[in-house]
Length: 139
Image 1 (cartoon, rainbow, N blue to C red):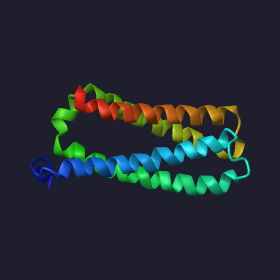
Image 2: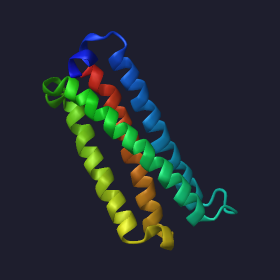
Image 3: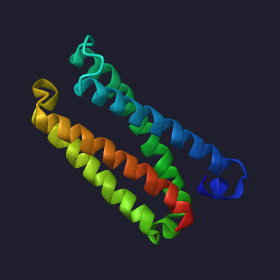
Image 4: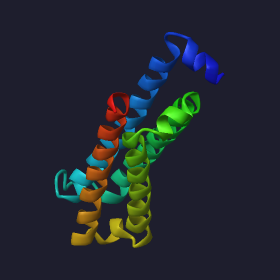
């Protein structure tokens, strides 16, 4: 299966498209929720919006993780030697830790300054993950 990803002319690019769609679902919904937390769309209840947007973001993350694992499996040695890939993995760890802290402290219920800072940091981390993902091909 991994050999077909390397040998078929359309397989890897198609997998990249799937990966990008997952990124759009993930990041788009996180930014939507962040905008609400920062006060835009104040007439939308945070709890209802978070259930919808976090559910879609989680689905996007699942797509990204599955497609990313397949892409990694097709060329593990090259990716492990790539500094942009290493930084991307560290940033993913940071994003996971930030999300665990955010939800663990009940930030959606508090919507305080720390919750806003956590959401802003989350978006910045995810944007850096996307940037590192693009740099992988050029490093």
